[in-house]
Length: 528
Image (cartoon, rainbow, N blue to C red; front, top):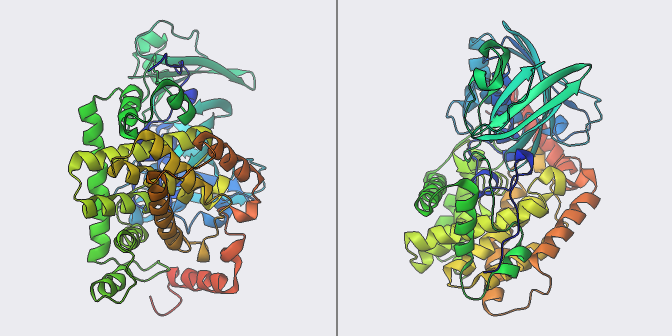
């Protein structure tokens, strides 16, 4: 390998993605990672501004945002309740969060008004409690990732991956402190705020103030950031420039990347990946065993497909039939508030896991081979997020199920013993096939056409992997495809992204189903 490009940074807002932060995760319950999981993280950070002692919370968002139509139906409300209570995104109590808030004496008001926020997933929170009040503005940036952009009127950039100390009118910023990532002073309305980010909480003496003047925020991401962090590459083209991609599988480079990014040993990376694999497999098993939820658009269907498959009533599609079964089961687990891994998002949580696990089982792959395939997929996700986005609100369904298909295609190449070059080719093929795919949830639920698009994403992955393994020419390198992916996202009309304002989401049937589900959730339909 040649000399590595310099991707070191002392600025956490510019730090490279982690496979376990940005791509495979969060582990969560709820229909949407951009909504259900991101709002948990935003709520958890917000409550820390007042030391967890809350009495009233006002949640505001723009009338033109995706939240205006999806706050309740796609789990933002559930996630926000959980976060304000300090829970994790996979807490089994999440469906009862509103009752727990009421029991804790915390009143919450939700308001949509004209704010002109440019980002479609912008939350504005105003919190009050015994210690005073606080304001926070945060973005859900896709796949459960977030950015806090304002605290009490002061501009900031916090991603939830560091320990943060906020100090008003601080005399000085610390320098030369071990584990210090960044210390900046930001100003607003004639006042100043010192924002200090570090690997571990810093002592008041280091900050030069009394402890009662420090507001502390703890990380909400599983892989924290570190000082002097450097990764060997960020894009597929950079990897190709420094390595012979025909001589090693993509997992070799994925392992190298994540060890550098996370600071984990190879054993720790494999152990973390295995933990996610087990959750994915349990999600499939749970769906096959049977799921139920009142507020669900689609009934249980995986059992019918399994029966038809066993009885020989389906066309012989080989691996694809097993994959369809697993995709359906995993999506049913998600829709019943079961625990899933957003991989890379909750809306696309089945394309990659179901395809990879179905293929691994069909091939009799051992544990290490399976985990390496999952790591290869994770690196494709890193390439996606560094050049484009997973967020449907930003780029439609091409953003999430497109990425999931590209990840799955690379995983299948890895399982078949293909090289990194072939895995990147498969990912390019898969992503080219979905450019322009819109996001238009029927009845405002992340169930349909999401199920069908996860299934077709799996079929796309299988076809793309086989084409790459056979030596088909993908023509356009993955980096260029991702640049096109981003450009298409930028030109896509807002009505064709995840705002329930276009496509299938505005058909008469969709609107009728939405009304019926709304009546059921209020106890007014007589059938729930």
